[in-house]
Length: 288
Image 1 (cartoon, rainbow, N blue to C red):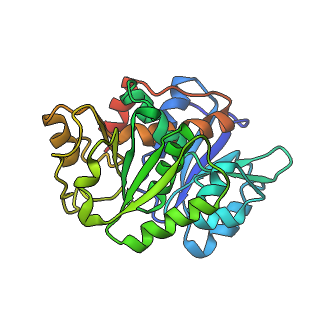
Image 2 (cartoon, rainbow, N blue to C red):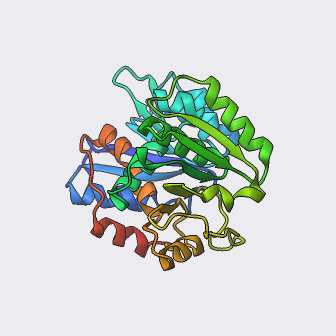
């Protein structure tokens, strides 16, 4: 579409940023809703990230997304934080307020929970424990989302136990979550037995991603009705999801998390809460 001089502008900051699917995703929504706006890639080197973020109001941007390796730096550069960003200690969405100040948000947990709700509408937070593999930033978003939803116990399992212990301790000493419960750190070599009576299994690691080693996990102890989801979406059906699907477990791929986490930012910048539809999924998949 042709832009006017009044077009709203947003973008995504990363280093590198050429791999980002966000311009394709937001571009689809801008065309779909006939919005006079643009969403552009913004390659910003790590030593220029604060300067770039602080320049957003002067350049007339309505805000931007922030991707690797800038999420933690953005946390330190904005004027205020929403509760999710404060608890995550990372920002993936920046909103330029009318007075020129910058608000940092984190929508990763929202994206995960919305994708889970879409892909497995029968899942309930009170159905039983959740097993989360990994202890990075994505795991933090997932664990917080699950606790806020009311999951009684999250079994956190990581190849490096100390990292999982640190994450659990950090969340335990942070602000109160919601009606959710405890985080139990389980040794990596007990990941198979830890699946017993679990209602949800989430892989937040890169194991099983295209070009990465496979995830070695015996699903024998996993109940047949347990939901299995992977935040990886290349491939769309990872070996974990294929194995779970073969034994009858409901599965949820990771593409929806990418799509849903983008919605709140688009709404803030362009005034329209966009929808995640089958057509959108197909369009984004064509660009992978």
